[in-house]
Length: 110
Length: 119
Image (cartoon, rainbow over all chains, first blue to last red; front, side, top):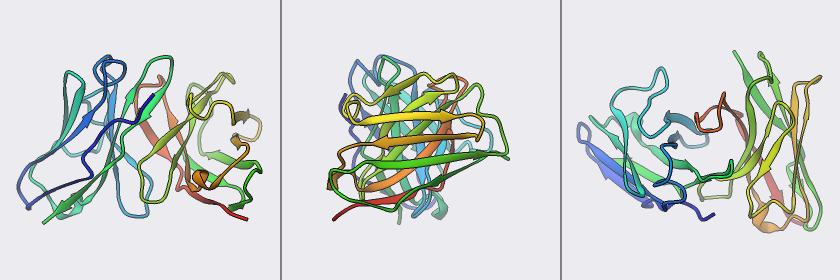
């Protein structure tokens, strides 16, 4: 299994919306409704923000939303805030009880 | 609340075996998948594998030949052994929990432990 493809960086101004993509194949992202997104602040462990493509765990602001089209999943952060500046990682179920992560995207709030 | 804490040597010599333990406190090991995930310096996350509370394991195919995970329910601990390490195994190693199914997302993580492979 190969790592999912994410853009190395993304940016937006406070109040704007930004979308981060996560591209895989029909064997992972495109084959299952099991994409998760994680936020990682500097020096910290990742935090689950989205699971099963578009579901939010309790406590995650509704400014964070997920979607999928074909082999590409997306995380959209609306109403950007300074505290959203972090690395974002996607992961997907890849069949045979395996998981695969993306390379991560650094989100900068300008 | 439930917490995870990794422990183990921070420095391992090339060709030797990396051994880490994750202690689960404040909750039960039952009904969850317990995983190891690593992050090389400046890079993304890599899924190493999991051990289910019943002892069933599954490993990343790219690491399968070198990985062994075990569970000690009496101590509420699970462990990782990675053999024949090289510099490419240098990373922050996280233990994490997912459940009740593998696709629910990792909602609990340890703080991570840095492991450096160097002579």
